[in-house]
Length: 250
Image (cartoon, rainbow, N blue to C red; front, side, top):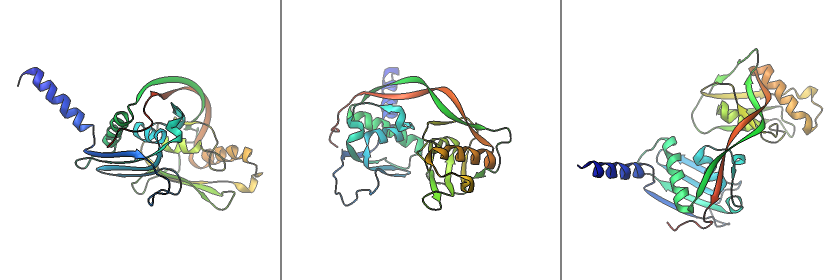
């Protein structure tokens, strides 16, 4: 085969490896019998990805492994919702499914975007002098889960399942009473996934939401040898420059 023909063949093969065999992308219709009750719904199997009632911002976050707060673009990427069903020709590893979803979203929404680095203040999750300690390897596979509160309105603790430290850090950044309401970045250097139960010392907790971050920080250092340290760090933003609100027909 001539060199030019071989290169063309390889290019086509590579493109096919990065695309789904069949995919449906459409605007979500409220009142659908399969409509998720609480926002976006995601199901990932070895050969397929299903998203329902999902903002494009959320879909991009999954496909690029990017936090929603670090993606910006036209208003419609957060106001419009979509249903996506995408199937590969056979079993596909999760990392490749993400690449295939990037291709699908770019093609169907005619997206153009760029990357941008911005230096912003964050909280870095790092090892304390006595850490790490008491960390338990995740007992089972599956998607990251948590935080789940233990107790009533004022949680006595927080449960996280199958979380890598990057997932754990991101989830600690949620609003009180489940997080510190700031951007938290993993700086521990720890690998693997963990099951983590944070026990909160509510006996000495005044009860105000503004005091919750201090309670959480104390629990992290005392139980696991982890601490939150204020830093300035460059963050990678995904900027959607343009795209079509109505996706290309299936």
